[in-house]
Image 1 (tube, rainbow, N blue to C red):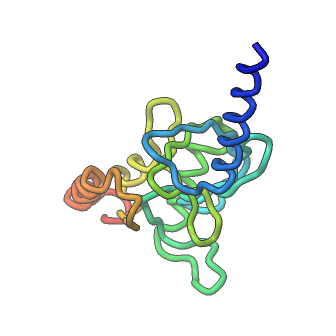
Image 2 (cartoon, rainbow, N blue to C red):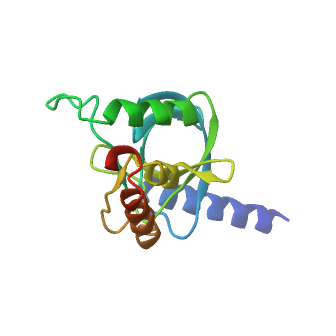
Length: 159
């Protein structure tokens, strides 16, 4: 019995040590989060494991509304309002791709409310355009199709 406990402790410590240094996520990994604030059309703040984190939606880009060196861009406020209406105060699920953080230390994620992927919804409704940064490109072909459809239907910012 003592041998099993020692093995378990060694394994636990090894996982903790490796986990602390890892910034990449392999495979599908999901995390629950509680949204506390919407920053703009593609960024929000949420509580994850008791800590407030900034989350940037993967592979979508909405017009600027809070950039310190840029004016509010056309359709930016509408995109921010849409994200606020979909996320503020809600519990969401975060899906990660290959890299979990960007250069600003924001968590990069595909965001779900129930079965709805918010990244997809922003594209379908014409609030965002596709912005792919390798290696996080899991849904690039699907997202480009949604963006093209929104453009062809003159939805949102494409009107």
